[in-house]
Length: 335
Image (cartoon, rainbow, N blue to C red; front, side):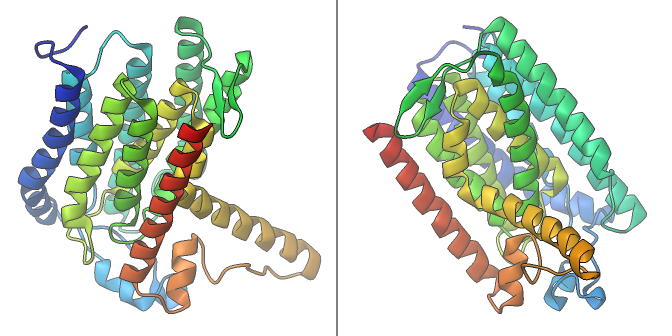
């Protein structure tokens, strides 16, 4: 096994993976927050005066962003230290994480320098995500072969070359879904902890389990500073990469349908945006004016508009995420 440290038992690696990112985030986040404040690397917020966001979100203006640098940095370090570097799935995880984190960092930087919420254009984001996902899918298909797709209630199904388009859909979708969820203090990081730990249980004694534990540990350490009222945001640097990494691990293990179940909050958030945009365009063509299904999308803002506090939204969404995870584990181990 190729590691940057001495070969140690798998259980010990899991324990180290659980501790390392958490401790790094706890120790280094205050320094990063101070540095980002000094650099005035604050998060631009869409104008509440335009009816886009609730007025209370204006208090978040200037909160340091790009905290994903520490999240992703600690995960990458853990992968290099504790995983099998000859494993094609690990190669895919490393590539996807570095590219999408770089994309997110570029997006966050442009938002900060421009002083608004417009970063890298959506078309460029999708193009980079799609290109990366395609490289990963082709590489894994050629080197390791297509894993059997695990169908809830039914078991494994061989899908052959269909693995490639499925991988593109899952990696791109997961990356953007986590990005859309990252709109309230602690929402995305808390959900990532639950989802990653659940996926780790499903993966079992596998290097991908180590990757999932690293994600959970890093997000748990980040949540210490990201809970309401947040002292730092992960930014696209963190959210795009975390989502892409979850999606990559899922496709390499043949479990994207379980990721959909476990990460139900991510799926709901993404679906809410697609439905909102789709209905707005449809109604504008049919009625001459755009109409909305929700008061605001993503759906966590809809509930804010209905009077839920930010903390209520987060805790209730975490609860749904936990329930989804428990149901998914029951299905996985029962069928």
